[in-house]
Length: 149
Image (spheres, rainbow, N blue to C red):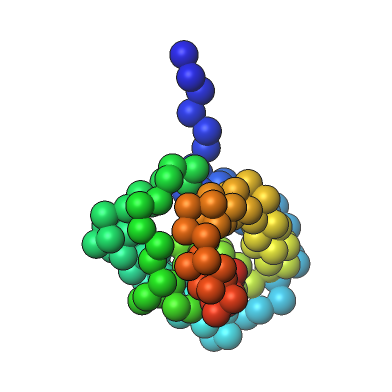
């Protein structure tokens, strides 16, 4: 029986739970207070928007959203004009929004750790697959649009 590999939302939820747990355990490290912490709501909306818009673009193009599956289309418009990885950027924005809302130090650290984990676990492989499949078209897109923002 083949084992299923964890997908990006699994990592996102693990880091989200770690952020909440770290805040509960070390709440005394709070350094952002009301009303400033409410700015995190904007990041929650922004991150959610990025994820929904990117998912919609994948469906519209008829290509896969699943990591490590071959894409049938290189999407370069919409939110993909802002970032080569808008879904991962959206997840990071949500984690950062939660960290702001909580206002304590460790959720920020956990959010920062999310970035290299996602980069190492998914982005490098996905971008290599896109380079192999789309060649010069991918290289032109890669030069025009940053990985994160």
